[in-house]
Image (cartoon, rainbow, N blue to C red; front, side, top):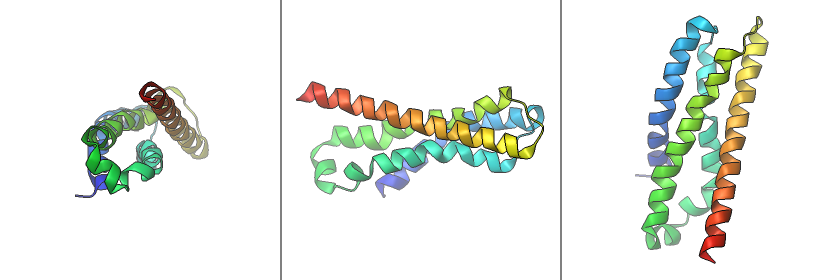
Length: 132
């Protein structure tokens, strides 16, 4: 199975559990729309873009199974939790117009994507410094 497909399937579990629960509560309380649910997949985009370098390199993956497990299993779980939380601020920010509600969701998804990318860059910088 392709590593990106496997990581996406692993990502979908926490993202859909947390995001789905938030969406079900938000449908009635904050007038969430169905299109807003796709915001939970924004952090996976950051994960996929950041992991292009090491998931596509078969020499790196076959020689280091710990890195493979870390990249394919544990990273999507962390980004899935952040993806599920991308809908959470919509419960607390009320607005009357559809445009403002969608803009709030888009900003929250972009912020979660940025938080994930920055935290992974800092993690890899610390790991790189500790191994050298």
